[in-house]
Image (cartoon, rainbow, N blue to C red; front, side):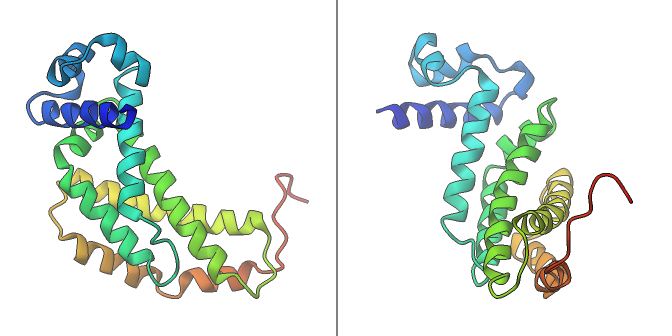
Length: 193
């Protein structure tokens, strides 16, 4: 029942965002649309932004669905782009509000998890530290998320398949090259010697 109530609130927020900017939406709007009381809302979420975080996490997990290895990462990234496009009113509403960082943080988490799993898979057989694996995933995450946010900013006009194909062409072989280059390479200390 709890998940059903959460999804009802999520769907209500998404519907309302097709008619109103996020800054004008209240908890009363959401609870009225769901036929629940405010206490039910607060039982599940602290505020609207907590609900937005939950939606992002759930939608991202659903889009990726375990497609986080070297053979399937493009499918996972494509599914994420398609889910973003399918939820256009919600994503653009959050992106163009003062809460843009919610979308950025969500994309960073999802894309990092996707890339980290790929880096771990590709690094089998190489002596590379956990910190260097994290660094590689973090580095490429910023490229993926930056280009994806630009795609969102421009109205998601480019077909997700073309978008993902371009990203794939840009990094083809680069993750493995980064792993090879960083294998047995000590991490630079903060204090330069």
